Length: 331
Image (cartoon, rainbow, N blue to C red; front, side, top):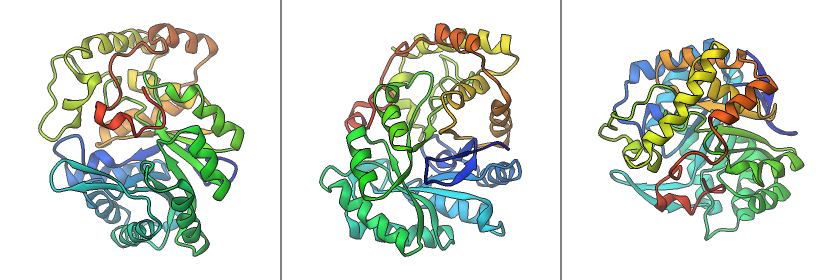
């Protein structure tokens, strides 16, 4: 397994990370046994970075990972945990909470659910508009000084917030959506990260399966699947977006890889400071994703990919309108 280091001050992790959200939330029915087997397969393949959030399934994901990680050497993996998103019963989101006392409370619950004594990278899931980022990060700094957290991370914030947070405590990485069809980070956020020596963990590299090569225009999202409310999957946009995937499939065929592997490889090729996260929920999808690290893209390959999926060519926002205002980079 190749490795990459998250920023100047962050941990060294596998060049591909596992995003665990879908094992508990957002994509419909889940299979506990298959989820645990997928985590085991990832670890056995050398994946060391596992990303979760305390609000994924209202704690379910952390408990699932605790079971999957039981008996593993704690130094053999790195846990990235997001906090601060408030939820109610059912599919209800109630804003964010970045108050220092809440930060410490959230961490205490996560440590207990995960069954560990520290979190490797701890990050607010979204910016709390009512709490200065310096206060939220100051609380995480105290937890770092106390040994409960190893590194500070951020998620879905803009360049100005990154600078303010980094001035309080060095930021290891920013977690943000980045894919062939979600490239808003390139304008200002990615240059800021590189100026400050901060890494990126890129989620949504397959745009929730839309550019995986496995989605079809006639497919309907099942119960509990958030893609049923996603603008890019809507009837008005999905056929256009899937036409981009078919153009990408032709490039992948010439390269001797799958569409998903090409899309993951493209993100990885954007810089050694970027670690793609794949939200594989099954061993089959994980097995497809892992070889993406072996796909070497030449300048000609990158040019062909750009022709297939030009910047800004996708239709629809990456989230429903109600969630767009809280994102560090828009489309």
